[in-house]
Length: 396
Image (cartoon, rainbow, N blue to C red):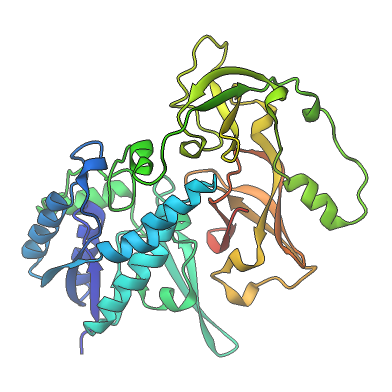
């Protein structure tokens, strides 16, 4: 019996080539398009209208001679992704919808539909690879970086579980993007030259403030500029009563008040902004561009600093609460008091940085060798050993 694979055909070149390769490898392939969004009023351009995408996905399936259908997951998407985003922004955190979309939609709701169609595996067009080996009589699955260093998407899958990985295939993980496009044009697939979609997972390019304004009302507040010479930046604590106290100090988020700087402008809602953001402040006349160094959603104030080297942007540590720690490699989970040297990143495309994980009673501290810019609550930190992504957590 041929093994059956359901491919999430998105209407892009990557998933099209994934489907083609699986068919070549002799799998029984079914193409499924996920419709996750109805409201076109908040998208910026016609860059990712679902209609065009589903049409392209259908034409690819036709060309490959595989069955195709569309599934409407917009209700689950709204509940699990959009509502979550609103809640996070309201609390002054910055969620990562792409990571969540993979955990909650593609590899959960979608996977369950695929398995109900008798699939042995689900496949996607992600640039990452899967490894398998046996340990103490059990199959262990590894999530490995994609071969194309410019396209590696393992970070977006940092919340997957062993069970999800066991049923997943990544057909293009060993290829470079240029090779994927070459295969698509050799096979005359309509998606061969199609630009990669950008913006929110499944929604396309969204005007974030307008999107958020559906639920979070605009409210004018002060933009305060904090000078790089602010006295708190110079103060460093040397003595600690315990290791954990030191980690807490290195991971602490700075608290500001209005008197720590001068007001330089007005914004329309602190919850529309995120740490490290440069665009959308509309404040001119500064020697270097202003960056958001902190937001206070309770007082509705945005604190900014000049230049990307402003000390308010940097810190060496971050904290993940116990319930937010996720290990893909459950066999490597740290017990209390244990530590592990890793490479870690706090955002997609960030080069991996040396860090140490410290497991304590209260959670997981990640202390970097060098200070990191714009560590942002609500985003995901992912940690690696070489090419392998071991685990991740929500920055607290």
